[in-house]
Length: 364
Image (cartoon, rainbow, N blue to C red; front, top):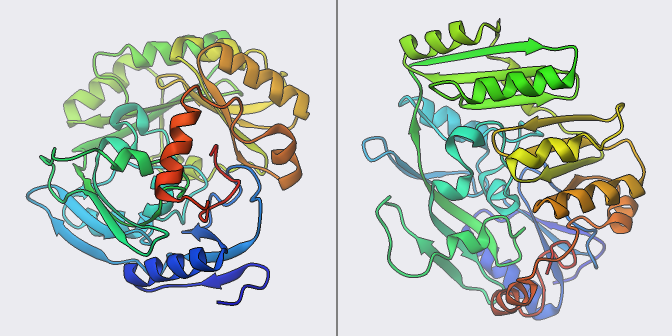
């Protein structure tokens, strides 16, 4: 295999992915898995160039059981295609990541990206029930299964979730899916002061039926989404007293993707204290119920370091989601390494001893 600059391969099967990965490892080349290309600027800049393996040809629905509420798909299928297929049976996967559309399922699992619906449904690791990965030694490994009640063996699925492919290239996954709500209602309100906006967000979160998604913006806007029976959702909307919003507002919100972008995470009751330290002209949006905020950075590297220090002191983190190579190299995408770094390195070595996959991009 001859590599000149960034060679691109487009395998059509999981076996072909494993073969290409093994050949690259044997030749000492780096491999960069790419799905929809929506998160290519996440992480630190790569330490060397190599082969780009695009998984978009792996786009089949492998198995689907509407009665059992499970689905198995290849990793290159887009989230939109999967939702369309599940929608035929009145079901969906509760994923609404930012920088949409175009995410692949494998890419979402590798990056750990989520969206507003995380408030109600959690992250994909909570409804991921099976995974298949290609390893640098040419093997295909499987963890979990295609049924919900599968508890045998080690839970290796969670090792691959959010690991940026450093444990292996995800080629297929199985999920528990959810029924679409009988009623879907969105409401919004805009406040002159952030004190009022934060208070409104807490009011919505304290409703007898909590919203499935709630977003707060640096402009003072608060947006909530209720999913449930018609009577219950209408009652919550009436009690809250906000203005009705078109459901398409969430599709537009999912397109959010600043060119220089950080995700701030903190214990939910400490998130505001971190965001309050941002300059008043800085734009951000947050999910107060989950303790996650997204910051459209327009400040200096020093400000990013300062906010990261505050988030870390609060027990959280600041991760760069997108930005130029020089900015990511200067600030560092991940921040202070965790106390478990030595364990992460041992795991990385067990799966990818020569750091073939995404070298330099992840924490290890």
